[in-house]
Length: 499
Image: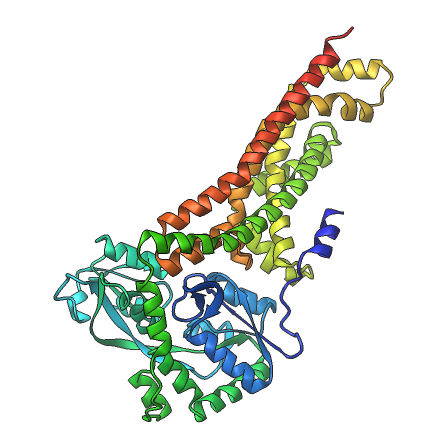
């Protein structure tokens, strides 16, 4: 019944076959300058890849539709059919080509060294030998660094974390794709780009394996925006046209396009100083935080309903059911408690479609969290049932109740009173664990924090706002549990105080 309700009221998974729509995916949470949230309007997406997709969609006569997904989930989501293509600085390496199809490259660049402003000497790749250097995971920069054994490599998922470690002296230097180096290191007075280009990096659009028709269709549109100079103008606006692009496309023209997007982004980032500007910015964050809080609460509440219902069934079966069913319930509980929740979420969302079971991100998140917490709830309820004196069941049977009636009317209510505080703690834990559903494209509170903090480089103020949101979500349920516990306690006293 619960699952039917969810399927009716929550949005379905993104479909890649919507007529007149070009569906694509990117990890836009901390992804400057590829696809990211405008610092002047956090509800608006922008970026040079965002503009490229818009140009391709216009050529194809379609409307672009973006799906947010974590970097690790981009290719699995493509294989699952959630969208038609992925454009997110993906390099067409040999390993990537074994999994997906690629368009022709739409951008060619190099890696650049980034240092603290007061550093000197580390302005070439040879100078990095013997030092600790940070980079982004699974990039050409990481592969270049891996070729030099004397360099200690620290690879990061998020660019902002790498720059934070460089700022704090945990790294001697960074080696990053030029767009990342420019838009993170080039806008801060704390950093500088040093030396010349290192290596070569290509980005291409990824398509599901076997989807050659879609790949060829987009390639044709890509050829068109290259031929008429649209791609050159887009890159020029973002200050990203490179000599490597000019050489590869044999385009040495000057379109006389000012780097307006680069200038606007730099002004937006450097202009966010002072307490008044911060206060205005934090007020602007509230709609995003409220949306993330609502999604967190909705996922958690639905999952807890599922967990409680299934947990009670598992506990009753394990304690009072037939031996075979009790054994199966025990296996379920131990398997679920013995495996990571993240793996369970990914399996339900990306693995089950192979068996014909496909759920929307919301439903998959609810099912995964509900099934996981049901195992823990079952053990809580089993302990609660065990705390009820055996004489209670015997007395109920002596009063001519059936076994089922005795459980429902006598044993379970007393056990429920015992486990109410534990249930409250579990729900608060579930609220926090709901952050893991961000890996299946849901933007709840924790992802909202990542988005805002990485866009504005503000981890303290944004963290306090999001932490307060989690606190306000949990406090009412703590109060409710205390009230319910007090009411149940009075009820039990009244029942046992009269003879």
